[in-house]
Image 1 (tube, rainbow, N blue to C red):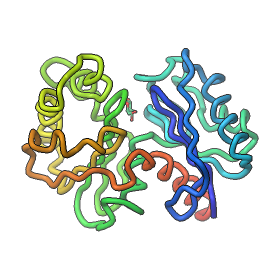
Image 2 (tube, rainbow, N blue to C red):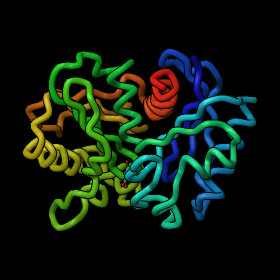
Image 3 (spheres, helix red, strand yellow):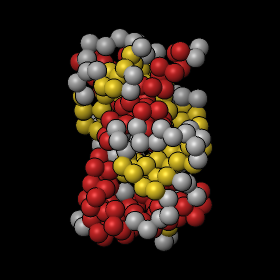
Length: 246
Ligand code: BGC
């Protein structure tokens, strides 16, 4: 079974058709519209579906708390999304059945099923590095959704305002400087959750070798093996699961 996976981020909206954990179409990336209102974002998802000539189930990873399809927060996306049913809005724009989950939860699901965390035993925490810091927590392969750890306070500032990928670029930090900050974030997460394994996602995870020497946590740290496709694959996988479990 196939689904269109869409990863809605603060700076780009990426989509591809996925089957068995693999991209089976070209990957399309369209910059996130500004302002990133519900109508504007839903139109971009519809454009991606159209450009891929796709009709069928769509899974979206969305950068906010998602409860039963409804966005409850909007840190890096237009505030107009708060309390909006994301599934309904995208369904109306695409005329396809839609499932929406948090973007980091989607990336984590992909790594658990197809990537770097396929051993289901223990506690695994996915941390996505991008416009914000996303988190996804798994115990024995089962997701505890919407953990939102990028909003934990560290040195009187939210973790994602201290050590996200966007902060590294905006402040022109070297990998060493940023790595030291990111290590503080992981150490905080470790003190609270004691994961056996951290998996790092987002575009910057390809640069793990540059900041790995800064990381002092006890847990293993690995880059997402699905790299920046994890969000797309996880979102599509959630849509496929939803349909096959019905
Ligand atoms: C949002 C999370 C999201 C993360 C990564 C944070 O600002 O609150 O929901 O997972 O950014 O996009």
